[in-house]
Amino acid sequence: MGIGIRIEELRKVYDTPPPMAARGAGFSWGGARSGRKEKKKYEVQALDGISLEIHPGEVFGLLGPNGAGKTTTIAVLTTRVEPTSGRVFIGEHDVWKEQVKAKRLIGVVPQRPNLDFALTAREILLFHGAYFGQSARERERRTGELLEKFKLTDRADHMVRTFSGGMMQRLSIARAMMHDPEVLFLDEPSAGLDPQTRLLLWEIIRDYNRLGKTIVITTHYMEEADTLCDRLAIIDHGRIIAQGTPQDLKRSIPGGYLLRLRFDRVPDQLMAELQKLPGVTEVRSADRIAADVYADRGGPLIPAIVNAAQAAGADLHDVHIEEPSLETLFLHHTGRSLRD
Image: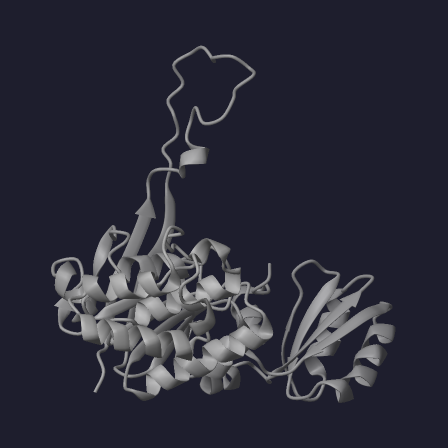
């Protein structure tokens, strides 16, 4: 039951800048420059050799900050961006050799709604069903079901341009599910949604997954990844830095707890004293003012940390304790927060 996904050594290098970044865009007040200086080649590596296997019928998450490569990965899998190298498969179909067959198996919810503002919600769903060869009776039945499920029945015959952002997002997901795809891709589906709509979305995703459908979600929300995903991969700078179940990934953090400490200074003596504390597995300091301490406990370590600081002649200014989470996992692997 369900269809899996296989990604093999996927790389993507963008060699042209976005339109607004291109030379000549906008106004120039300095006049033309003379000389024959050679223009520097534009090159951004979005994906750097990603390999993944997503099992049939699971909810798989791609977790990472903005610019990590999540959206590019989805774009390659859904035929919107051609890879520089590597291969991707939806089921048995090589996506870039059998695009039509692959597209029939997938539904896609883009990061930003791309709905036709000249149509009503009902028309958008009906037309989408027609694109995939559904009969008139099937289109009508499916449209009614989805409008009800996404709580859009009372606005079914209203123009989409009158919808709120949350309503547009719900309609985008309904449209992606209209032809009952075996694999559903959702790129940042909760971005900008209010908490009530987010909970509704999560329940709909779970219901669809219970039908045996494979679901791939990109997100930078820790709670969303932890709540919905059977497995996930954490991506940063186009590379996978960790993957597994949320529970296994959290258990892989040294000591589990993270104590983020800020001092007036962090001398070597203080680093050595912190490392000796009971239950401490790792101590890091990037700027000699702050220190990250990984340990098997949180609050009970504070008195010992204060004593260590005093012994080293340093003043403790701030303490922040984080329990085992995907956020602390990301911090451990990259040295920075997902919000950075």
